[in-house]
Amino acid sequence: MSELRAAAASGGARRPRGKRKGVLGTRPWIAVVFLLPALVLLGALVVYPIVFSVYRSLFDASGDGFVGLGNYGEMFSDDGIRTALRNNVVWVVVAPTVSTALGLIFAVLTERIRWGTAFKLVVFMPMAISMLAAGIIFRLVYDQDPERGVANAVWVGVHDTFAEPAPFPGAKPRPNADLRPSGGGAFTTGSAVGAGAGAASADLPLVAVQQADVRDAEPAAVAKPRPGKVTGTVWLDFTRGGGGRPNVIDGREKALAGLTVEAVKGGRVVASATTAADGTYALPADRAEGARLRLPAANFAEAYNGVDWLGPALVTPAIIGSYVWMWAGFAMVLIAAGLAAVPRELLEAARVDGAGEWQVFRRITVPLLAPVLVVVLVTLMINVLKIFDLVYIIAPGSSIRSANVLALQLFQSSFGTDVDEGLGSAIAVFLLLLVLPVMYVNLRRIRKERRR
Image (cartoon, rainbow, N blue to C red; front, side):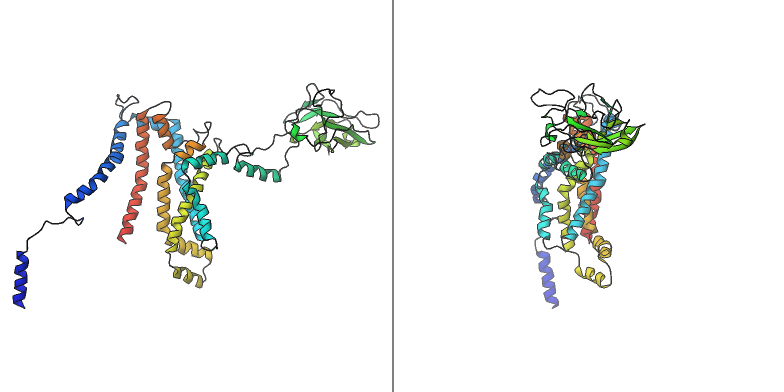
């Protein structure tokens, strides 16, 4: 046995020694050959642009004058860039949080429903749409005109369900008529009214009524005197085709039904009535006699057109809503994949021990999904720091400054009307510095996962 060991040792010693292999499992020069194309592309597409942007940010707009950190100082003193920075903070805080929360809710709830897969498909479908197409879609969704914008069509429908629209928006009395503006959009007669059989009818002619509002209206009728009543007619004092007489009810002129008529004394409403289908109304004489008649502003208020979603106040939340519509499906799919790996025994054991569904979700499901939630949240944070397409497409020209973000400001400074590549490069470097901490956190998390 000792002889065999000695022979093996001597044979091993005589074996020729080959070239040592590197850590990659092959010769180092072969690894370099295979990695060289990737390194060249990485240097050309990533390293060189970063180095050049840092270099260019130290020069003025022409590129000839060295200004040092002057572009960075201008960046923080410019109102537009400060607005973009504030909006980026809102984006980073709100958009990833809402998208992740909705993704978590969708992922948990779809486990319990029969058509969960179909629901996930519908929610994930917006991810197949480009940012440009999504921006065009939501530019139409947020259109101010309820006839075109879906958001305002729904909003106006809900509003009109609880608030009766004005019967004749935009109507007004004839010039030099007894009805005169009395503030707030209302009209009041200049003279007091009488009552009884000998009193004249208190007629109130109006013009500027939209034809669509009186297309099916009945012809106006002359109000007949009634004992103990102040009577009159409210009508459209306009005859299509001409031939009508001002302040006189002609046969083809239309009645204005549903208008509120108030009797006012000393600034106080003492009686009110609503015009009938033929435009006539009647007020109690004991209260209305000697009063002035008023048509309140509610009769003529312009139709409610909804919310100005793309105005300066709401443009950023509106665009964030379109982003959530696109990326909530992405969050849902990743969280659902993580949820599938959660041990069901833990959930069932908690339920057996008497834990409710909310307790199971809060104490077990969410902690076990924490690594996945962090991945989704960090990924979306990096994504929103670079947001550009949606803001550029959705925000109208009147609100673009209010919706401005750093990536859009970088584009405008570098390629807009006032081209300043030095300032644009400074914004690009600053945006890179904002992304680096998030990327560092993500890399640390990946390393921890590998150690496990």
